[in-house]
Length: 339
Image (cartoon, rainbow, N blue to C red; front, side, top):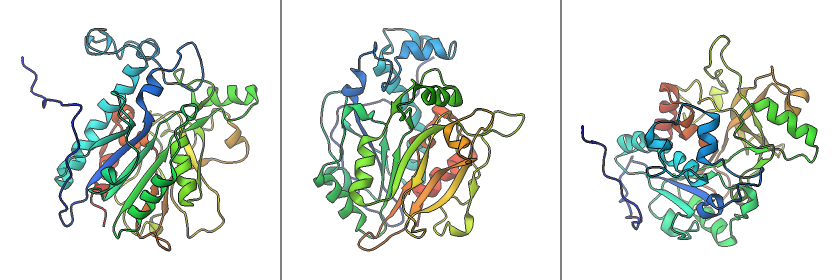
């Protein structure tokens, strides 16, 4: 039986999408250096992605089909794990394209072939909603330049724009090894090392834009009792003025999600629209301090010269590596069709 999936291309120059009223153009910018991640020393335990071989060992037999396990068909080092992300973003891209009529390009700061692409007009000129995924390990040194901060600020000065920025988790920030061990036991993912600090680029972009958000920890969500389904979000619907979470009850389950700490007392500048209950059967410094939920979705409304919206959300909720249901798909469509 022949493969009926669409032919795939690589190494092409992006073709700008024409503006069409009511049809948002979404773009994704992955703020990593692909070679910088793929070439990490696998004898170093911390601050790297797993190799595909490690993924297969831990998740056996989920990836034992030849599609994943055959070294002639799929990369078995760290690069193989990075490619899983691209596989899992396809459905999000398809849903958005169906909703808007526009393809969703995936830009990388440094791609597989070594091409370097900062955020500038090549990325922004034909974009209405930009998603920046902070999946760069901080040890790779990705930082937003002054020119990039200025370019994003100019983008957000345009009426109707939206920036979705997602620093990933920050596991093991403490120098206390016992605390790191507690965090590791809390999330329970053997593929995540005792220290895995993500988001140097997105952190620097947030700081440069003066946005008071910081990613902290990697927290395991609670589940619906007696099931493996993630517990519903606690949503402040009367503050969701633009309907980002209309019809949404939950995101998808992931073992280590960041808490998006709001670092200002000005409640109007950063609105926490959704909080996620935490699995309290597993101790963690954050829950030991009295917290039972973390900030999962934050909205920063237009302010001053910023005419566009800023949303803080983790990259995992755009990926089917961690599941997909009607609620998650509704969130994707809300974002694609936002007013």
